[in-house]
Image (tube, rainbow, N blue to C red; front, side):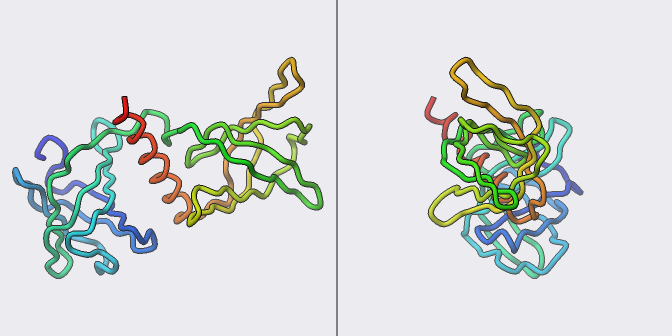
Length: 197
C-alpha cells in the first residue's frame, strides 16, 4: 500500500449513497492498509461496506475499491485493495455504451442512440439532422435504478455515406452527484471489460 498512498495524501471516499461522499487525509500507512482522517462527519460510511476511493498522485488519478475495517470518530481504517488502477490521461474514462435516447429543445425532439459515454460527454448516432447551435435536454438511462438528466451541447457532427450522423458533444448543467455517478459507472464498466480480457 505504501507505493499507492502516503501520509498527508488527500483521498476521496464514495459510499453507495453518493450524497455521503467524504474526503480526508492519510495519517498512517501499513502493509494491511491505511488510516485517513475525514474532513466531515462520517455519515453513510459503514464498517465492512465497499466504497470507491480516488486520489490524485504523481502518476495520475488513483482509483480502487475497498472496505472500511474500522471507524473511530472521524478516522477510517481502510483495508488494502485487491486491485487498483490509474485513470487514463483523458479527464474521464470513456466506455462503449448503447442506449436509445431523446434529445429535446423547446418543442423539438430528436431520436438518437448512444455509441459511447464518459462523465464529460457522449458520442451518439442518428438519422436526423440536428441543429449544432442548440443545447438539448437529455435523460440518460444507465440502469433501471440510475438515470442522469442534464443538457447536451454538440461539438462535432459528421455525416457518412448512408446519411447517418455521428455526433460528439459534452454534458452541461451536470450536478456533482450525477457526475460522480457517471465517473463510477464508467470506471466499473471499464474494469469489468479489462478483467474479461
